[in-house]
Amino acid sequence: MGGPAGAKPVAGHGSPRPSVRSRDSVSAQSWAGRGVRLEYERLGEAGDPVTLVHGSLDDRRTWTTVAPKLATALEVLLYDRREHGGSSGPDRERPVADDALDLADLLEGTGAYPTHLVADGYGGAVALKLAVERPELVRSVVVHAPLFLELLPPEARAVPPETWLRILRERHEPPSVDEVAQGYLAAFGSPREQWSAWTPATRRRFAENVPALVRELRDASATDVPAADLAEVPVPVLVTVGAEAPAVLRQVVDQLCHRLPNANAVTLPGTGHLVQLTDPDLLVGVVGTFLLERNVPST
Image 1 (cartoon, rainbow, N blue to C red):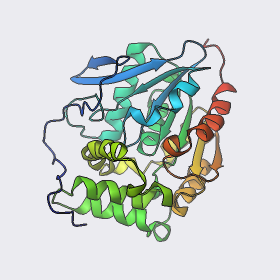
Image 2: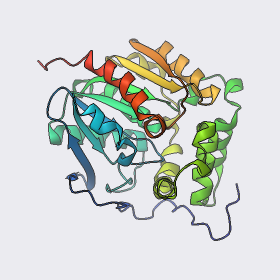
Image 3: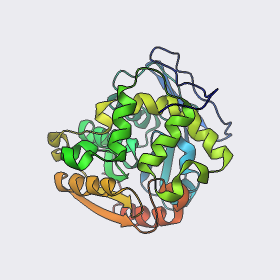
Image 4: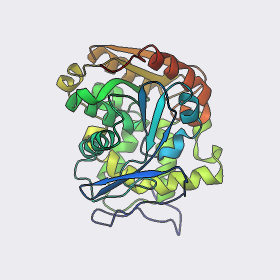
């Protein structure tokens, strides 16, 4: 995966982890503790809390269109995970576990619990981890396009997403930012989600989050989850996947739902991995219906 000349390398382990600070938001607030600072926003004043957990390639801006639509009937919290957007903190030794701990602290610090969790990609691993370890904080979970490739038998994983992940994890020299972003979209995106399809502003945003993406996807927990953990998820789970996503991701959804005690799957027509950006109304319709059916007062 040789990068273009002059491409910016991804920072290696041990580099400082300041916030990306790619935007100023008049509505942004922050929670701080344990050396971690998480930047977040809250929208809506009625209904259950719902927390949006972004994936590895983006930050909370991925929900820019989705969040206000959900906020017409729900109280929405969207935040930047550590090392993304306006959030910062020390190196994550175990990214999935550390992100779940960060999220638990944020929910308790803001009082936004028990909450519905809506997550995409890597964020799904964080959401399910929290549901297992802190079930009192979670009402339900929605996961779009989970990356749990290890749920499949080895022969089913010998496809571009698994090959790309293996190369990313085994490389010693820092890959270039553009190389990683393009490779991620080639592995997990639909044909209309490839690098050239995005605006320059969106490509810059993706590039800003690549250093965190590399560290997160090198965590085995990002793509593997123990069957015993899945069996312990106590809340309803909706798993969605785009009809145009790679076939291996649709197989992952089947296996995930088979292992969860209370899960349903929905295939979203005409869309792929980044549905919150390409088809936000479609996602809001499916997710909103699922959440509002469970929108009951806390006891």
